[in-house]
Length: 284
Image (cartoon, rainbow, N blue to C red):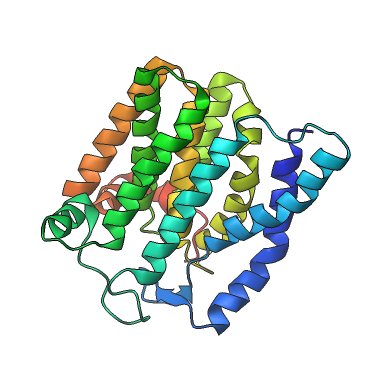
């Protein structure tokens, strides 16, 4: 029964995807990808729409039939995931330089750029997203009954994972591949499917949106990439011990620093194994 949210959300995402794709395209909601090809954007809204629609039969089943559909941790998961998606959507729609297909993108890239803008008294959508992510993580993890050190550790993992997937989302399918590989590694390492079912309401339609992103039929945008990062961070927190989360935090700090100072795409291109994985499934 606990797999039902995953299955219904997956079905909801598959049914909604063509309509969302068409609506974004016909409404002029497009952005050029790395090959300057305009694509429907932000397709990450599919994840939110599919999850919310799947809630209708799930909640009715839970209340009217007395079935235990959700794991208890679904509340902080939904709170953090939906909040992060909202912040990503704000960034996608209101960020400087994202008002046209051919117009320049915002020059405030990375935390350093947003930090400099904040020091000048300017509130960029990136700064709002960073601060909002921290507030959401602090609030969501307060429901977990963790000790203060573990609570702060979980918050750090959540915030940095959310940002890390935003750094990865510079090529089609890269973010969803990282998410799938991380989830597979955590599941095989722990032999525990509970975190997957707990995240299923959002993880399932994320797989659908990621497939469209991989095939260059749409772009996830920060709405989708940050959602993937939020789900990845939650998966880490739900699966790993305190020691495991410390290791994850160190890795995420390294990725964040590298992404701030160097190009992750350049690293992938000059590493044969990563280059092959990165290009797999992408149209030639």
